[in-house]
Amino acid sequence: AVSFYSLGFGYSAELCIACNDPGFRAQQKKRTFLAKQVQTFKLGSHILRDAPYFEITYKGKRRKVLDVTVASGDIFGGYYRLPARLSKKGFFFEISDDKSFLGTVRTAAELMTNRYSGGEVINSVSFTLHQPVAAHIGGEGFTAPAPCTVEIGHYPKPIRLIATSTKA
Image (cartoon, rainbow, N blue to C red):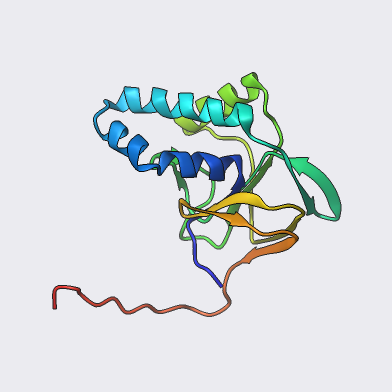
C-alpha cells in the first residue's frame, strides 16, 4: 500500500522526470512566472512529440495510450485545478491517447484557466500495464515493470502517522 497525491504513467511521468532535473529546476528558479510557464510548456511539447504509446487493459479492453494520471486532490502542477478534492473519497482519473497539437493546447488552456473538463472522479480503479513504462509517484520517477496490474482505492482503515522533530 502506498499513499500518494499524484501518480502517473507515460507522458506525465516523462514530464515529471524532466521537470525534476536539477539543471531545469535551477533555471526555473531564475525565471519569472510567465517565463516558467513558457519553458514548461516548451519542455512538455518536446516530450509529448517524442512520447511513446504503451498498452494497457482497462475495463476488459486492451488499448494503446499516451498517459494515465491519477490524483487524490485538486491541485495539479502546483496550481492547476482538478475536480477531485482531498476531503472526499474520490480520485481524479484520466487516460489520454491524444497527441495532437490542438488537443494539447486545449488541455493546457483548460488547466491554466481552472476549467479542466477531462477525466473523471472515481472511488477505485484497476488496469494492467503490458510493457515497462515511465511512471511517477508524487513526482518521483521510476520504471513500472510489466506485466503489472495497478489497483488504486482508499485504504479501509484510518492511518495515523506520528511525526517527530529532527531538532529534538
